[in-house]
Amino acid sequence: MIDSLYVPLRDALKAKGVPFEVAYGPTQVPPAVGASRVQLMSDPGGDAMIAPRGRFVNPRAYVARLSAGVVRIFAKETRDGAMRREHEALANRIADHVHTELHKLASRLKSILHVTRLGFVSDDTTDGWAGCVYEIRFQVERSAADTTWTGAAADTASPAIVTTLDASGPVAAELPSATTRIQ
Image (tube, rainbow, N blue to C red; front, side):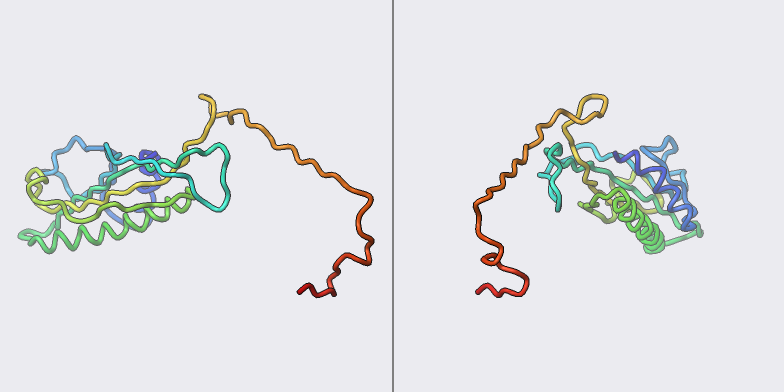
C-alpha cells in the first residue's frame, strides 16, 4: 500500500516545484555525503487493524487495515556555515509540502491519513548527517475484504424480500393524506 503512494507523491512534489529527490526505501547513498532528499518507506511494525466504519457498510469488509509508512526528510542547507536552525527551517518547509500532498493522496484514494508522529529525529540517530532529519510517521486506512485469491468477490447470500398485500384493509378515506394532521 505505502509503495503505491511513492510515484504520486514524487510527481506532486515535483509539480509544486520542490527541487529535492524523492526516493522509496532506504537509499544506497550514505546520508553524510548526500544532498537534501525525501525518503518514503513502509514502517515495519506500524500496521494496525480497526473495525470498519462509514455511512455504508460493505458486507465483505470485515476489518480496516492501517498500513503504516514513514517519510524521512533529510534537509541540509547548502550555504557554507549554515546553522542548525537553517537546516530545520528547510526541513519544515519540505515537511509542509509532503504533509499536504499525503493528505491529498489519501483523499483521492477515498481513505483517511492518520499522522502518528512527526518531528525532528534526535542527532544520535542520524548517522553523522550534517543537516537535520525530520520524520513523519503515518497510517493510511484500507479495507480488508472477503475475496478469492484472484480478487473476485466471495459468495454472499442475498436476503429475500417478500411483500404480501392484504386485500381486506382500511378504505382509502380512513388513511391519512398529505392534508391530514396526525397528533
